[in-house]
Structure formats: structure tokens, C-alpha cells
Length: 130
Image (cartoon, rainbow, N blue to C red):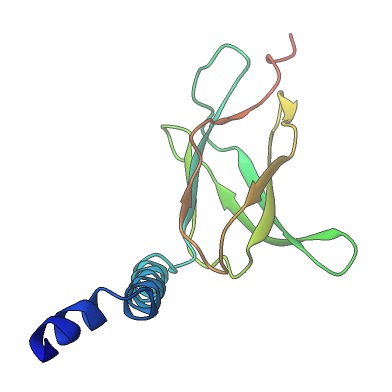
């Protein structure tokens, strides 16, 4: 009787639910610790999908009311860019290059500050002006 009662106490919702919550919180904190390097990576292409080398990418961070420029990066030969010091969880990205103009601003919402992010879609500049 007493042995069966001990076994049932471990199966109680008063043990299982807090245990699951604690496990979830521990997993989330571990995930945040591993993915909070402030990396933001992506690419810039033109209207035809070709990489744009030498484009300037602006990282804008949300302030109290507006977004303000916090950093700039230049794309490499493959059109790739990388920021290594993002501290915010609400940013916008915008690209510009001579002869192309500007891309639309891309809103990037992150789950936590300094979360690493890789854009799944490139920033797209208009087709080059003739």
C-alpha cells in the first residue's frame, strides 16, 4: 500500500507539470545562451536576382518612437553582408547601391535581444537604371 502511494506521487500532476515547466525554461535559457551573438546575415540582389557587390546595408534599431541607424555593412563579391554586434530584438534592414537605388526596408523581429538571424530572402534592389 505505502509503496504504491510513493509510485503514484511521482505521477501526480503536481510533480509532472512543474517538472515540464522547469525543463522548458532550462531548454529556452540554453537556446538563448547559444544563439545570442548578435549576428545578422543576409544577401543583396538586384531585380534580376544577381548578387550586388559593394552595396551598403543599413541596420536600423527601434528607439522609443522611430528606428535609428545603428550600423552599416558593405556586401562582398557574392552580395553577402554580416553584422556582428546587433543588440536589439526589433531591427530593420535596408540596402542601397549606386545605380540601383534603395531596397524596401525589411522588418526583422527577433524573440530576444542579440538573437542571431539569417535572412531567408535577400534584400532586393530595383533593376539597374540605364
